Amino acid sequence: MKKLYNTETILKTHYGDTEFVKSMAELFIEHLPEMSAELQKASAKKDWASLYFYAHKMKASIDLFSIESLTDVIRKLEKQGKAATDSQTLRQDVNYVADIINACVAQLKNDFALAN
Amino acid sequence: MLRETVYIYVVDDDVLYCSALAHYLSLNPDYKVKTFHSAKALKACLHENPDIITLDYSMPDTKGEDLLGHILQESPETKIIIISGQEDIRVAIDLFKKGAHDYIQKDADTQQRLWMAIQNLRETIELKKEVESLKKEVEKKYDFQHSIIGNSSAIKKIFALMEKAISTNITVSITGETGTGKELVAKSIHFNSERKKHAFVPVNVAAIPRDLLESELFGHEKGAFTGAANRRIGKFEEAHNGSLFLDEIGEMDLNMQAKLLRALQEKEITRIGSNEIVKVNVRIIVATHRNLQEEIKKGNFREDLYYRLLGLPIALPPLRERENDILLIAKYFIDQFCKENKLGKKHLSIEAKHKLMSYSFPGNIRELKSLVELACLMSEEEEIAEEHLQIYLTPVKALTYGNGNYTLREYMRKLIQQYLDEYDYDVLKVAGKLDVGKSTIYRMINSQQLKIAKRKIDA
Image 1: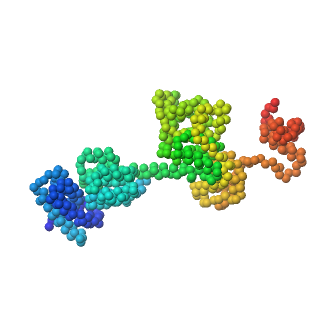
Image 2: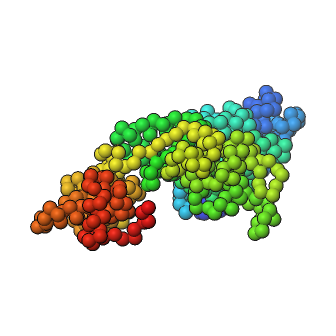
Image 3: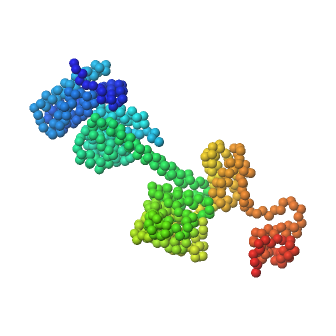
């Protein structure tokens, strides 16, 4: 499977500190699945404020790990939450985000030899 | 200079982003970085007064602007840098108005921009810290339990008066012999009063030429008189909200006294060559070694000004009336001098202490200071002996003529000679003092047993 993320952005701004990248990966594994679950819940309830809030928060982490397959869709969800408008693809989008995040978590666990 | 630790709190509920920022900032070893993921956790730590807080605008448990207000209330010295994913310029302006120091957008360059912002802030913080510590040092210097040494009842009365002066704005008039510490008392009053954050402006009236005193005190406009090339702010304006210390007020001439009186009564001044009236709020402290009541009688000092300046009179006791304080102060000066000059600890011998206690100190504390400092230099050992205290002025002329084999007539001649020398060869006065006939003295002068030098004309 194609690698979904890369750590170049983190390595660049943190002067190649691989230990730090590992600790960031741990945090990603710990928090991102939770957040994407919240995102799904918010879309089911059409809770636009929460949708905006979680999309906004996830955006920073997604950019940090350069998860290109989510770059656009997370921004789309953020805008949608802010504007409080429904769309036919909403359900599909949040499920896609959750799938990619889960796949990323699996890859990260594997690459950094992390249990959990 | 830029070596001080800077305490930075990174506040962001996004755990990843927060860690990334914190880790990035802690690459600088001078930064101590703590992270917070909720407003509640931050509030619990605000009492630590961090130097800088980077604040995510949208925290889940509080509104960003409320949190900003809360931080500034709890820890007003803290600089706040807002980091926000929102791109709304109105929000940013609003936050600036509420006291945020900087506003950085969350994007790819955030970390670098934050780094620069903190670097800039740091210099400001360093300067502020330096000013604070210098201020504290000055305050400590003039904390009068440290600056004025003594246990005697005489000085305790002075402390009580100073306490009263500190708690009010009353004019203080300090009198005392030279070297009793008039300026020190004035400074201590200022630096312990509510005016300590503003200037203490000392003016030695005796040291400024009469013609220049007015412009010195009130300032002048450009071209007000020959040589007034620029506009100049006077000491009164300089001391606005602070204290103005007029030393040797007794030396001020009558014309100037009238102008000073007006300034004090109206609480306003006019610069020379200007029509503009400047309001001033100044606490006045005056000092003199003269007896102003005597000067009023002689016509050298205005009575109305005297009463205006009298306020709270503090009469500093001369050192010889301060009992054991002489030794306390001597010890203080010895310790200070030895420390400053790396001489090791020294102390006074018992004989040296007796010598100090029996001396009259016409120059008071200033004289004591130079006396013991010289003694510290002269003594090679730890103990400062009697002979190291070089008192040149013999306080009382002793009337002993040793074990010379003089006749009674000789003793008489020497005694009268000494009295004549002392009383400026006033024969009548000496005759009265010694209870001998003036003709006896005249006869001895005529027979040249007594010497008369620079005799004033005796009618």
